[in-house]
Length: 430
Image (cartoon, rainbow, N blue to C red; front, side, top):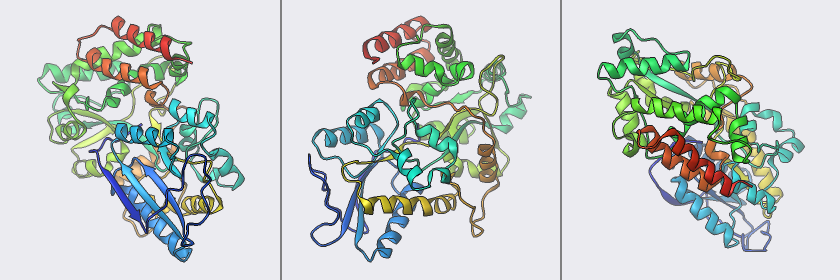
């Protein structure tokens, strides 16, 4: 569930080169010919982003502590579709890397069923590290049955940012209910203001809007039932979600389907739209305008009779780190434990929300915005909106995301949209 960046393919020797050692049917030797343990991590993170920087720092320090006898190589494909295509090709060819990035989605479940991934929950429990993480950060990584095969390196909340100057000009206040939100949008549009800028190119931002009403009505029960073929998009809850997209879609910026991530964000920050939905990973981008008193944020509004509360909204710990069960030797385990012990403080020092509990560094001047959002995260409820793309099979997800653009733009009816999704579920649900 996540930030889209420009596609980058970067093969990096991190501290030194690594031997892949993942040939089909082969078990990786603990040491290479020169006596150096090497590990390959195929990752889908922003190059030179906070996670990338911290993991490099930790890996370099770990290598030094091991006298140069342990080294890691990172190969990054930041564009997620390209990354997944490469990952699937490698695994199908029997060349699975030692560490991979993957969501707890249907493809990940296929790897689990094939015995290819390490049971991360078991690993953390056996090593007394499970409680080192915030509970929600780990719960996000779980499958519906409670098993967990991915380790989080990030922790986020998502919110709607709004332009305070525009709101004040039209005597508007941050909405607390979904009806109030739609009324705010109508007032803005009636006054010639673009209510919401949306990144339609990446699809997932529009899919978030589809999930909002069903989450308020059922937490994640509806999407789980839909995935399993036990619910229909053409049901009361499903249609309510689709109808909300059709209604709020008229308040998206013109041409939103062709608007990319950077453009949608710059529209908002330049005052060309009044609202923008994104997560706390954009704190740095929002910081200056927030400090100047120009912008603020609100969380997902509520509805009457909702199953979820005002302090329950989209919280996620992003794409997880998974480990090749065939090559997860003692030295790799030791490195992962080293990461857990050191990652939290270093990641938080970059004013990022850490999934690992850690004291904030006294050497860092944390912004008021960071501290405020961190406090919000400590007060979230039991339920959290889990992005729908982590539940659905790839065919249904593609059909849903592509046709959501048509639904939001008024070029597809609610009934037509629901039928397309239900037909795909019927063909693909296991």
